[in-house]
Each structure stands twice: as structure tokens, then as C-alpha cells.
Length: 318
Ligand code: ASP
Image 1: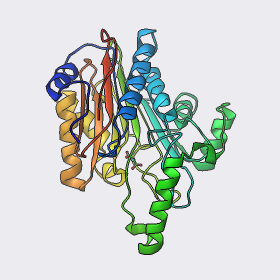
Image 2: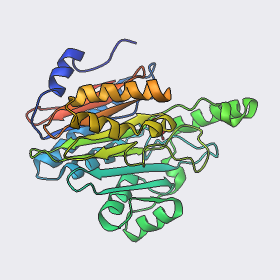
Image 3: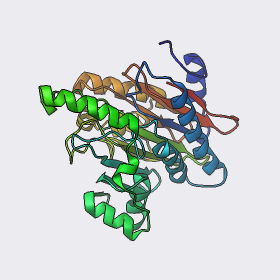
Image 4: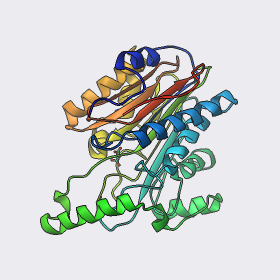
């Protein structure tokens, strides 16, 4: 299928390279199927980026903006996060999410949660209200309950599409063994930069399809799935978590920006590193404190969108 996007690549590059916040970029995962109808991915990522920019224009922080964009994507059943997340080999949803504020380096994450519609909200409370960075499993669910974040039944997060995929993979696993199932990928993420150069990032995922229960990838790990530092940049990764963890891809991209690379060049180098050193497939979005944005993937597709102040609507590609 031909490249599906609102602009040509050269037009996107010019928009991404433009300086000056506020600006927001989001991704809907590097595992976007090449044969899938692009419309829901384009529409979903556009809506998320626009929600993020609205928060910034109303005076919200970069972290508030990234979080607002992440919630839109978690609630959209087209993406592998929140509602519509991939299932474990046991046929359940287990979610991971993280956030980081580039001004203070405050960060929060949850992993292996089964009862939260929006795990990014719990990650944010870990960041704001605890001395911890990462809380897992039942402890994270209990913490979310304490914070008054509503719990839902695991089954309510499972879509017909993910159940059908699970049935296919399960049949394959019964024939060839669970570890031989090729794990498809998908995640959501958002990066934001305000007009004063403060950056933030959020990521959220159901993880790889048919993963073992308890498996945790890069998404809730600060430095791998998510990173933000006003002295560097903000980044959210997507792709095979086991590979991303080995090259701490989000931090790698941010350090490249600190060393002088544009966010777009840094994103390209980071996915190059992922392939060269860890044989990994994936993608990344990056926001620099000067308002420039970047994205790159080494997969056939990655749904993504961006918007900056002055644009009447977000521009998306898949
Ligand atoms: N990084 C996620 C994980 O490995 C999946 C993805 O981004 O596609 O859990």
C-alpha cells in the first residue's frame, strides 16, 4: 500500500524542523499493519495530538498535554493500549504505562495492571504523589484504587479484534509452542513541548501479543520507553520491548539532541541503533526544548501525528 499521510515526507520534515513551541507529537505504534485501513489510525492520532495542543494553549504543562494525548489513544480501540490492548497467552489484558516531566525529571510508571482503563493516569499519580517511579501488578492497582482512579473488569478492555487475534495465535501456539509465536507489536505515546522549552513524554501499551503473563517490555521503563529532560529532549519509543530495553532507546535519542542533533535526526539515529545493535524493529517520536519535533521507524508503518501552535488541525501519517 502506498504511503498514507496528510502531507508529503518533505512537507512533514519542514514542519517537524520548525522551531518554537508549543507543539505535540504522538504515535500509535510501530506495529501498524501495512494492510490495514489507515483511516482510523490517521483519525485517532490526529485527535490525540489536537487534545494535547489544546491543553498547552489553555496553559497546561507539557506533562498535562502529553497525558491528555495518551488518554485519547488509550481510549481508542484501534491502538494497543488501554481499551483494545493485546492479550497475554492467558487471554487477559496486562497494561504498562509511564510518564516523565523534563523540567524536574519526575517520573512515574505502572506495569502489569489488569483493571485500569487508563494506566497513564495511575503512572501520573505515581509520579506526582509517591516517592517511587514504578509500581507493578496488584500493588499498582491498589494504589490506583486509593487515588480514586476507577477500576474496570479486564474483559471490558478486550475488543473482538484482539480476541480474534488471540484465537489465531493460540491455535498456532498449541501446534508449535508458545515461544515460537511471532509477537506483533503496538503501543501509544506522546511528547509535548511548551512555549518556554519544557518537555514531557508519556507511553502506554498492552505489550506484545501473546506475551507471557508478567512480561514487561520497555514502555514503563524510564530511559527505554519514555524519557524527558529539558536539557535534552522528550521521547517515546515503540517496537519490540526486549530490543528497546537493550539500547535504552528513548534516552539514546534525547542525548543525541543534547549533543546537537535535531530531534528528527536523533529519531533516525535511535532507530538505526535499535536495528544495528539489538536487531530490533520499532520507532520513536522526539520533541526538543526548542520546539522542533522528530519521528522515525524501521518498520513498514508507524501511525503518528503532529501539531504546533498556529496549525488549525494535526497532520497525520501511517
Ligand atoms: N514496546 C512495547 C512492548 O514491547 C510494544 C510496542 O511498542 O509495540 O511492550
